[in-house]
Amino acid sequence: MADAWWIWLAALFAVSFVIGVVAVVAGVGGGVLFVPIVSGFFPFHLDFVRGVGLVFALAGTLAAGPSLLRNRLASLRLAVPLALSGSIASFAGALAGLALPTEVVQTALGATVLAIAIVVWRTGDAAAGTGEADALGTILRLRGRYEDPAEGAVVDWRTRRTLTGFVAFAGIGFLGGVFGLGAGFANVPVLNFVMAAPLKVAVGTSGLIISIVNSSAAWVYIHRGALLPALAVPAILGVMLGSRLGARLLARTPAPVVRRVVIAVLLLAGARALGRGTGLWP
Image 1: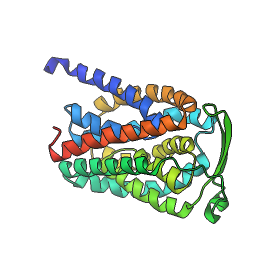
Image 2: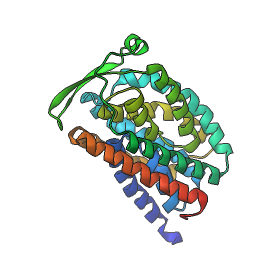
Image 3: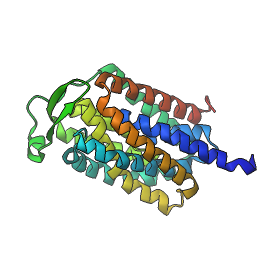
Image 4: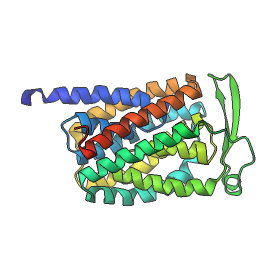
C-alpha cells in the first residue's frame, strides 16, 4: 500500500467533490462533514485534517459565493457584521483547539453537531422575517428580497433579535476554530430560528460568513504547521468543483428538502465524530 499513496489522494478528491455539492445545499460549509468523515475513514492525523478542514470550507464557500449572490440567496450586508463577531472568536478557538487532546475534540465535536441536529429537527422551519425588524436590524438595514423558483414566489425578509444573533455568532466562531470546521451547522439554525431569515437565505449567507470567519482561524493552523499542501490541494479542487454544482442545485431545491438534507448531514457527521472520540466507532 506504500506505493499506492496516490489512491488516498484520489479518494480525497472524490469525497471532497461530493461534500462540496451537499455542503452548499445544506449550508454547512463542508468542514463539518470533511473533518469527521476524513478523520474517520482516512489515515490522516486529526490536527492535519482540521487544518485542511478550515481552508476546505473556505474554498467551497468562495466558489459558490458569486452564484448565491447573483440569485440573492446570500446577503453580504447580513454576512459581514456577523462574520466580524465570529472572526474574532474563531482566532481564540483555534488556539484552544490545538491545545486540547484529540479524543476530547472529537467527542465534543460529535456531541455539539448532534445537539444542533436535534434542535433543527424539533424546531421545524422558522417563518421568514416578514414582520417588523428590530432596532439594530433596522439601523444596519439587514433585509432583502429574493425570487424562489421552487416556490414560484418573491420573498421579502428582515431580521429580528439581531443582538442575540451577534452573541451567538461569537460562540459559533469559537467552536469553529476549536473543531477546525466552518461551523455552518450552527450558522443556519441561528440565522433561521433566531434572526428569522428565510431558510434559503440562511443557507446561502452561512457560506459567506464561513469564508470570512475561517480566514482568521486558518492562519493559526498554518502558523503551527498543521496544514499539509498534499492534503489541501486535492481537497480544495474537489470542493470548489462540487460547490459550483451545489449552488445551482440550491436555487431549484424546495425549502423542506433543504431542511431534510441539513438534518441528515448533521446526524451523519455528528454520529461519526462522537463514535471516533469515544472509541465506539473506530
